[in-house]
Image 1 (spheres, rainbow, N blue to C red):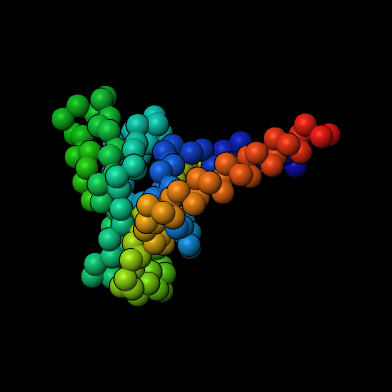
Image 2: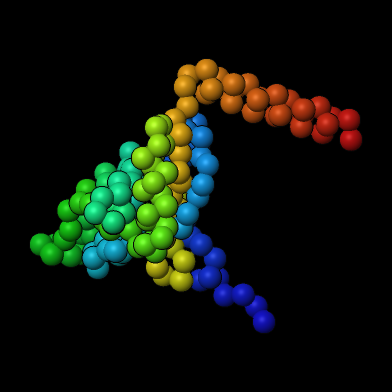
Length: 156
């Protein structure tokens, strides 16, 4: 039986700079509690998670600073583009993430916003900030690997 195309995740927004600025240690998929105009705007591809982050308070995970553009056909019934959005996670997951974030230097950042079967999902990562020398080391390692692949390609 052929796999339906709607089952494949459709990436709407990604935070490409996250891997550059942070060590991404643990990744988790979370649902989003959205209003109707927000999901329509996400389906239209008008979302941005570059400067977003996740905060855990009162046993709830909340996505802050994510920009989901207003949906033009909704006119006056639109949403606030920067409003806080609740993340849908199990209590155990929230508790575990909350304990890990309490540790020094850890934070929760969104990595990808995508659609699965018409539902918006957010991939969040437990991250530890990189220092400048860590970033330089990452860049040097990536360049060395690229050079090795290039040399191997020439020899074949």
